[in-house]
Image (cartoon, rainbow, N blue to C red; front, top):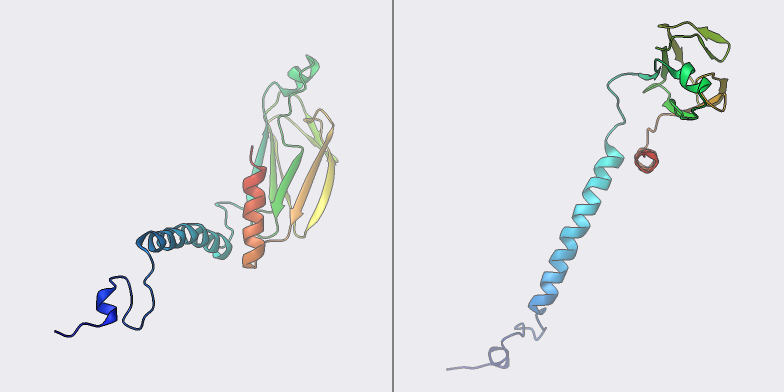
Length: 163
């Protein structure tokens, strides 16, 4: 029976290299699984195109808004800033469901009236708005995120800004 030095040592490779300990192999495998679980969704978020069901972003001024304002209530019914994307979600729709007319920019919106405003280029727009306690609404129109990095950063910003 021929016995070599490699046969005498159970965890030594025939070329003399040591095999990784079982716990080290498990740690590497676990690291690979965790890294893959993080990396794969990030790649999908970067590569997946930004889409919406509709190009319109609808905001409604609810019934009784004017009466609550006159009673001293300061609760905001519309966000102070609305974000739109050129070519993807670039039409702002405001519906006045209140009992009284509301002013949005230069437009007097009668009860039940809907106002549609399309935006065609990136911009920051300031409108007078009687539905806001501050009296002003800002509409930020951003360029559509077309590159993977811009898609990913847009999705992260959107996720972080949600209440």
